[in-house]
Image (tube, rainbow, N blue to C red; front, top):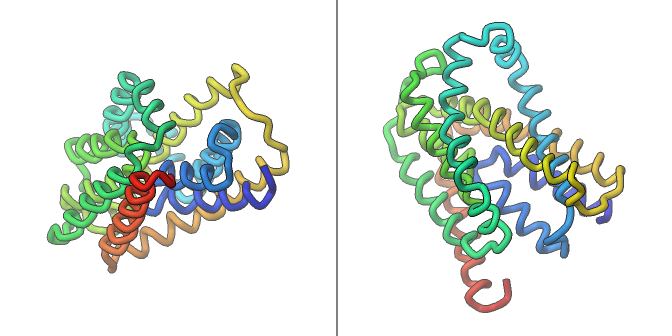
Length: 259
């Protein structure tokens, strides 16, 4: 793997983890384009560590508050929002791993992501702020996050959409979506590390790892901040159009035997 490839994959991971267009789906396409389909589990783990760093920097005050106050409402909301993904991941991990490796469903999943966001964007603007979030809201949003275990169902797209369905205001929907990503990304890193430490990885140079990780962290930080500000006054439909176009292109290439 070249340094340029690591840099590009870092950009893809950093941006698409938080833009509602699916990081897993885009990384799959990126690795396929570079001929790295079977390589780089260690790199993939480090890319996720990069995006975790971005979240920790943006939400350092909230996370520090929860560490000091583990039974606060915010802490409990985050736990409740994470439970559905934990259950789904535990019960169906092998099944979804198999789907991710084939890429056969990517096109349809991009189309579904676009449809959910398009419908959610049409919901009348909500009024709830973070302090108004209740446990039912957290569980519903967490259930949408659990559905995003499919590779091209965007985690951020589905959780933002769920927030809008639950009448969160647009900025808060994005804000909570990214906060909720913290345990999800951390859990993914832990699961990947199991294979990393048992030796089921490809060799990647330290320099490439460092470039990919730092790039993912930097672009992830700007994606979080930019997306929260973007959604305050603008539409999700732009992202719907993008993932629809990408989904249709992938389906065309798959049915043509090119992809």
